[in-house]
Amino acid sequence: MEIVLRALVVFCFLWLVTRAIGRSTLGELSTFQLLVYVTMGDLIQQAVTQQDYSVTAGLLAVSTFALMTVAIGWVQWRFPRVRPVTAGRPVIVWRDGHPIEDVLRDERIDVADILVSAREQGIRWTREIEYAVLEDDGKIAFFTYDKQQEGATDTSPQT
Image (cartoon, rainbow, N blue to C red; front, side, top):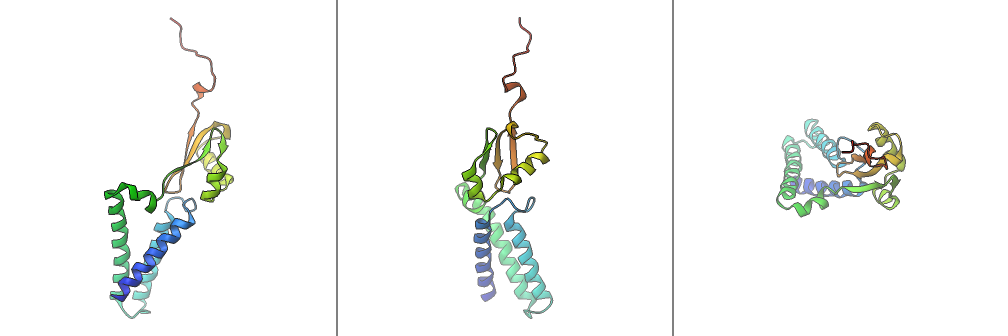
């Protein structure tokens, strides 16, 4: 039972740390997912190499992490209002061709990171960006101005 309690304490600590660190640094994996995988690997390593002298202890610790992950997923599904607390919420980081400095500072994102993401998505000029959203998984979604809306004259045939 001590191992389950230790695993619960470590799980909660890792969850708090990943929420505090932010979400824009790892790309495909969320920070929390990476930490869970690394920690599970370490727990299994200790059980396999007998540093803990118990395979059961490693299995219990990993099982506790897995059950907590499933439980958080279920809580997010059952009570949608909890999701912003457990997973975060999307925030607008760029509007009308300009960065929103306060949000960038709060999310600890550099303008250069946004510009790299914009270039990767084929955006050449910052003035093309109507707004950019930092998603809860750390990816940045860009919405550009429609070319026809940018003051172009109406070229549709007149009847």
